[in-house]
Image 1 (cartoon, rainbow, N blue to C red):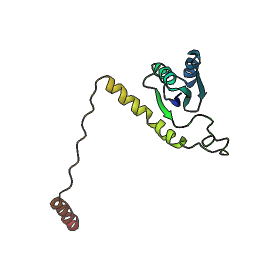
Image 2: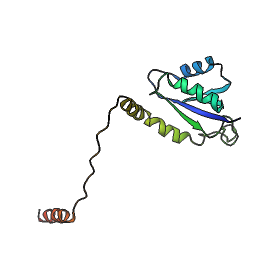
Image 3: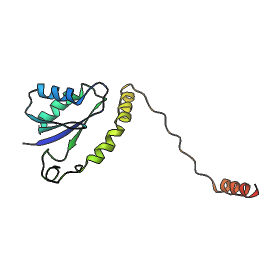
Image 4: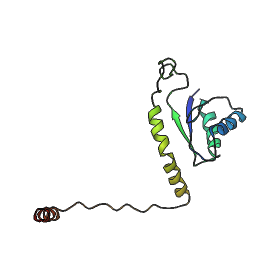
Length: 141
């Protein structure tokens, strides 16, 4: 059996982690659910978790983000209780990623609307002759 743990990171003005947890419990799926400061962790058989989370994400497709977690909750090497406290490995990266979610959501909305962002203009390198001219003018002043 292929068991996985996925993290649901919630960055939404419409949905609270408790709303997601209630929906997950209402599904009666054979999964373990744990609410966290960023959202929810769901562990179970891969096919069950994937199906359940694809339905859950429909609540707010631009505010619910899902990523696979490398270790199950309570894993001795990752659990803060056995490591004597402190942030768990990966916490600070997740915290950094979470700050980017509003921009990612904005990009996903624009993509779904068919908006194409303008191409960034490449900056031309300053030619040597122009640099020399700037230096000469600066020395004269």
